[in-house]
Image (cartoon, rainbow, N blue to C red; front, side):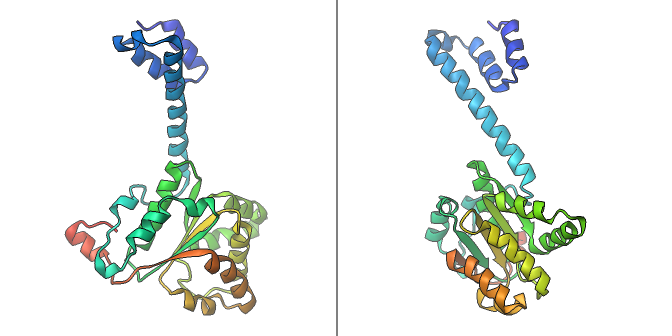
Length: 249
């Protein structure tokens, strides 16, 4: 039997998880045989799960991840892509985040680079990490606006705090010296603190010329490349094949 006064107490204390579990216990006679300690323990477990789910929902919302349905399980291992399944599954443990390592994913447009990056990010968020997805061009625009408005320092702090940052479409076009320096500041503040996933259509060996600043290029690549796991996707665009066969990335 549900006691209204008790449910009101749960509401007043913002214990929604415990309230829902209490109501379920009150309506199920199977709980009557449990000890007081066991029932309290179940109520606390329910509240913890409620808070974890709420936190995950909020973190997913603010992550800017475009494809929140992307999962490691749905990655397509078509032989033409030459993906290393063992490598992907090993990285899916997310130990690379614990060890502050990075991932670089390269391949032609439409080969599923962003999907794989977002699959890692979705799993990271669901395991309690804070992740953030942004296209490199968008990041550079936000940096430009922040410098103009005097909020650049706050922007650097914001991007340094994410456990996992996804920089999508890196090196699409040559960068100016100022843009390269700004990206270096973002990467420098994250080095050995948090992890970054970078996707790019260009192979890593061509990044140096894109950065247009030998000093910055050396420093940035030293921080990213040498501490990164490399995923190189072969083959042509998957988008047409996906539309025809409903395959996933």
